[in-house]
Image (cartoon, rainbow, N blue to C red):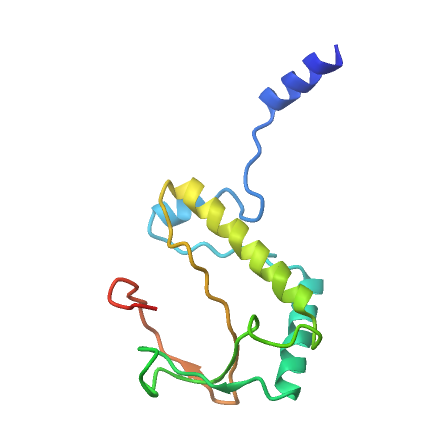
Amino acid sequence: MRHALLVWLAAAHKCTALVLDPSFTTALKGGRVHREAGFAPARLVDDLRYDIDALAQIGRFGPAGSGPRAGGDTGMRSALFADPIDRPRDVGCFDAFAALWERLGMVREELMEGLDRQLIENVEVHYVRYPEGGYFQRHVDDYEANDG
């Protein structure tokens, strides 16, 4: 009897998004932007801010460039950049970055399933700080023309 109930429950309930609201497919397939309210819980945001501040205190932020990896400043943005992976793990809150990384991986999987498309395998995450008046100009990434 218990097994039959579990089978019935499994058939009656279809699991949907783990992170994203199921409406993302309609928005994206319709050429619109999907904004996920509550994507990062407040605790995670607080821990990420702490992590970023800790890395800044030990001098892990440097000038951020955009465009070709080997090139100089393209004028696309005015910011400071830190790599949250290549860093001392005992500084800040590395677990917050790991939680964000896992969450982004889940989103990637949901996007592939919901849109029935393959996405590039690599996910790139950096911490970026913008000074007062800092900017990041509007652009479109071109992964086919970029080796990175």
